[in-house]
Image (tube, rainbow, N blue to C red):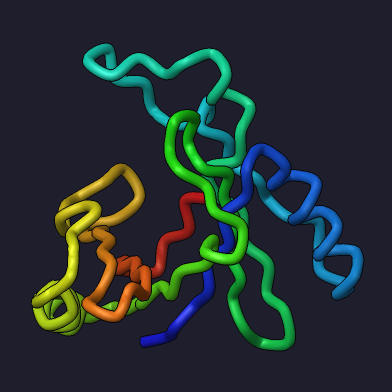
Length: 142
C-alpha cells in the first residue's frame, strides 16, 4: 500500500508537470489526455476536454505525485486542488478504507471497475479531505 498525492489544475497541467519534472530532475513524464481515453458514444467527449491532461505522474524524492486538469465544468478552487490517493494490491483493503471513510462523508465516485483499474473510487471524508482509491494490479496503463 502507498499513499500518493494528486494535484489538480485548471487547464495548465501540462505546463505544471513539465515544470516540476525539470525542477526535480525527473524523466520526461508520460501524459495521458482525456482525448487518449477509450470513447463512449453514450458520453461524447467535449472538444475542449480532448487536449486536457487526464493523468500524469512523477516520482519526486521517492513519492508519487500525480497530476490532472479538472474536467470542463467541474469546480476548481486553488488551494483545495489536492487529494490523497490510496494505492493497493489488496482489494479488501481498498473496500475497507473506502467504506469507513465514506461514513459521514460524500461519495464522488462509487468504487467501480474502470478501463485502468478493477476498483477505482473517490470521496470526500467527514473532515473535507478528498481521497482516491485505486487497485494496482502491477500493470501500468499510463
